[in-house]
Image (tube, rainbow, N blue to C red):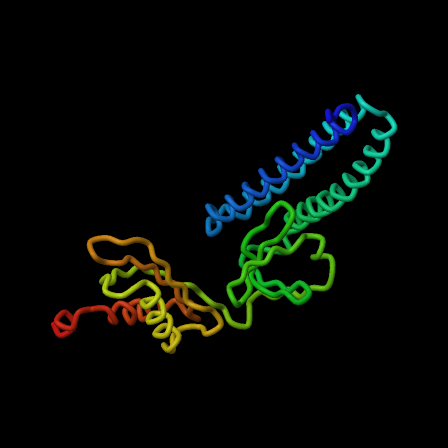
Length: 246
């Protein structure tokens, strides 16, 4: 059976809408995979979100134009639904953009300042287009929409415990799998009296070369004076006995 007229137009719209949705899903996962720990990941996500909104709006107007060529009555209904949706989306976006602009101009909040919004508390990491990025004491990254800053909040200049990160690289022999080294280093770091127990240490595998594993260790301490002590402690675990005796 041949499909023509308005049903065919609706099928085309659904087909291209599905393709557009899949494209955005692939882009979102790609950004998450490639730029998850990059400094520009927050800004890239904001650009992606704004671009996605604009693309869907263009798609909506294109759909109206296609339907208008087939049946003006369906066009009126479709246009009304689209306008209501656009107003809802636009209001949310515009509200956060304006509030964010006023927040930046006001200067009441600064990077590394301590803030509490409702049940979320942490250090301000960056200012995005529509949201504020904060890092909690547990190391979690949370985005707070700017309009929430007008609700209940408590701002403090310093957290109850100021935690600092210490990162260094270490080369270990490839005699054990990476996950075993991960467990050994984690336990040793947490058992030392220099680190903060509120933040889990991070151990990453950077690469393999000449029978060795190159690891990156990140520990969290209360004072930068302990950075060298932590690094010396961890590296001493893997120094051959003959070198240690010398």
